[in-house]
Amino acid sequence: MTSPTTPPIQQIKASMRSTWMTGDFGMVAKTIAGGGEAFANGLNIPAGARVLDIACGTGNTAIPLARRGFIVTGVDIATNLLAQARERAAAENVKVQFDEGDAEQLPYPDASFDAVTTMFGSMFAPRPELVASESARVLKPGGLLAMGNWNPASFTGKMFKVSSNHAPAPPGIAPPVFWGDEAKVRERLSPYFSDIQTEIVAIDFDLPTNAAGAVDFFRKYFGPTQVAFSRLDEKCQAAFAADLESVWSAHNVAPNPDSRVLVHNEYLKVTARRR
Image (cartoon, rainbow, N blue to C red; front, side, top):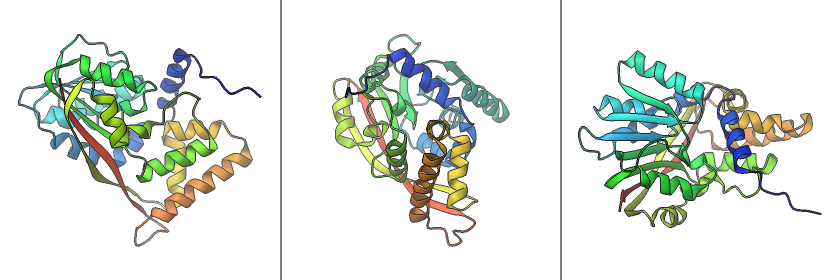
């Protein structure tokens, strides 16, 4: 028996882009928009700074940063999410430049930004060493890197574990939640950054539905979940859905669980300074 081989990187990239353009991540983003705003507003960034938000999605972090008066650029591989981000910024009358681009090969010159942010974003890129080096490359010396990464112990980490049990990622790709492991983060960032600080931050999932409805919601709108289901036959899909529903039910602390899901989630907030 031969072991599965890692697909070519361009194949992996094309698959990731397609995955994040599947469904409608904007619907999911709305459920954690408050967390994005709190993350953005809690960063110590000097007035007038140029800020790059990597894997910006629909603008949950970039738009609050722009409201604070920073010169903000958002970059993402998914063009449909960028379109939503531009619509949101226009509706709020804030100026953000949204570009198509890859966290592992950013389309900006060296030392272009005073700060780089990414919330539940660049952690999904397949080559973490390039995420670290590219984030450093575009930062000015002393510039701030701020990351919000789902951690393995979080509710989302547990959901990813269920997904990987039913629909494993391609071989050779590090689990995204490794970016939520403090030791791994320090190992990845230390060649380029100093003053690396981490803390666990609370964030809730609050949906007006029961556990089964929450599974259906993510299956419909969250690209990675939709794609994972599409790779399974009917019997395996039913088993996958049942396992997901079990996790949602076990963590639901809503007083009326038949009509509401309230899950206390968390992520690892990372800040560091470019050497």
